Length: 111
Image 1 (tube, rainbow, N blue to C red):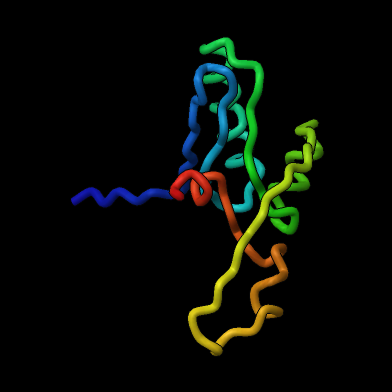
Image 2: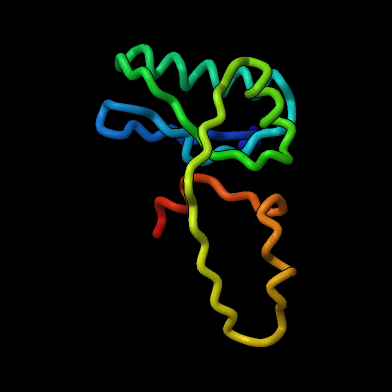
């Protein structure tokens, strides 16, 4: 019996043939995986003649440093989060450190 297992994946969204977004990715912290994802995304963009590729990434992840090393440019954007506590169990300081979050574009696209 052959068992198949998903090792990693990424989701690339073509936005109006103007730009592509890596909207979600789950992969091991290995340079070969980073290269495979970025190279596949760039190849797709070239095939469609798309000149812009973007993604959101937490600066604390190892992939962030890799992307900087290969020349990916960071462009700050305004993102606003609204928090409403439904009970008193949590305090604001429990969740206000955004460096502890793993948020991808797919989280934004779902709402």
